[in-house]
Structure formats: C-alpha cells, structure tokens
Amino acid sequence: MHPRLYTRLAISLIFLGGPPASAWTPATQVTIAREAARLSPPDLYRQIDKHHRAYAEGVNAPFADTDASRHAKNPDGSGRLDRAAFDAVDAAILAIRGHQPFDEIVRRLGVVSHFVADANNPLASSAADPDEGRYFADYLRYVETAQPRFPLVFYGLQPAADGRGISSILDAALRRGRQLYPMIGREYRRIGFGSAVGVFDDRSTAFGVGSIAFSHAVTDVTLVLRYIWLAAGGIDDRANLPAGGTRLTVLPRTAR
View 1 (cartoon, one colour):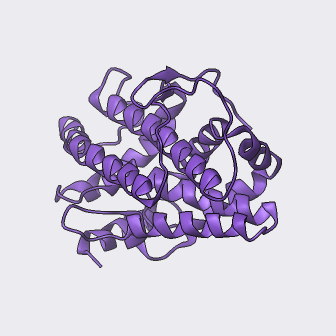
View 2 (cartoon, helix red, strand yellow; view 1 turned 60 degrees about the horizontal axis):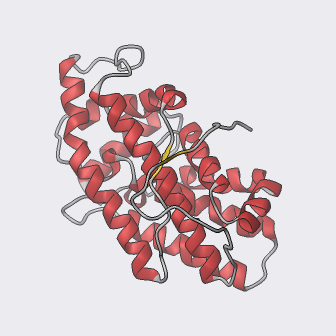
C-alpha cells in the first residue's frame, strides 16, 4: 500500500471515530447518495425510497473497510478506488439480474454510491502534498458543515452504455480532483493549517472546491445508478432528459 494511504487511515481512526480514510464523512456520503437517488430512473428511485434504510446501510458499509487503498486513486497508480467501484457496480447488476431481494439490491447500490462519491473528492485523487495529513480530516469536517449551503447543480445525463462508460466517468472525476487538489492545500496554508470550520467563508476557494466536488459527486452517482438499472434490464422512459454538459439547479434540497 502507498505510504500516504497508511497516513490517511491513521488520521481517520483518530478524527472520524474508527472508519478508514474515505473521501467524505458519513453524513456527506448519505446526502450525496440521497440526492442522486432522487435523479435516478423513477422505477429505481421508488425501490430505493422504499428500502431507504438498506440504502443508507450500503452507503455506510465501506467505512468498515480496513483497506484504505480502496478509497483513493493517486496519479502514480497507487490505490484501488476504481477497482472497488467497478466491483460494486458489477455486484449490483448481478443482484438485479439474479432477482435478489430489493433490500439486498438497494444495499449494493448504496455501496456503489459510496465509491463513486469517493472518486469525486480531490483528496482521494492525489497524495502530492506532503502536508496533506495536517488538513485531510479537517477538510472532510469542513465540507460536512458547508454542504447544506452548496447550490446543488446537476451536470446532465450522459449515455453510459457499457463498462467503458463507467470507466470514463471515474477517470473524469479523478482528473477534476487532481486539478482541484492543490487549491485545498493553499487554503490551509493561508490559515496556518488551523481548522477551517467557521473560518473559510462561502466566497473562499475551499468552499468553491467543495461545492463543485459535491455537485459532480451527485451527478456521477446518478449516472452510475442509471447505468446499472439499464444494464440489468430496467428502463428510463423520462422524456427530455438534460443533455450531457448542461447544468440544472435541483431544488428543493431534501432531508430524511
């Protein structure tokens, strides 16, 4: 395992109460999953909503994973986040095709959401900053506190007709993350590596990075849930779906 992944695991054990280093806190992960589910094909959303407890269990299940390499993918090739996401997608498709109980299917979809959301956090996409350990856990906490103020922007449905579609979604997420990654470190250097909670205002670069990453996470989880449903034989008969690249502000925000 890449040495930085061990550092992330240790930080998470200290600051997040036990689970391995992951791209978002549990509360943020659940919010991303819930908002994405609302944008998934209607038949699928009805099942997710009906089995929402199983969905949340699936979202949270990877926090029990002691292998931190499954929650990051660095430019040097270290980390197995992409493989974890592919495996979760395949397992969900097989569960639907195998007519497993919907509690189990929806739980697996929650696991998919977790790993796709991970891919959209800049801190899961690189380990280039030697001082990352000084702000890694704090930034996750900061995003959780700022997230209710993020404008949720949906970046449009795109065709994901085969496995290459999923790969392209993850690759694009990781590329975005690596572009945004240095900005987080610069913001923490600006405040002397102190805690960002209550310090970064909503006009800060840190807020903008978190907001962009959050909306892309919701969009990408939506795309992957839709791909799974269609690949397993489901339908999405909604008319006038927004084209890829368009931006749609989704209101109102919901809570369960």
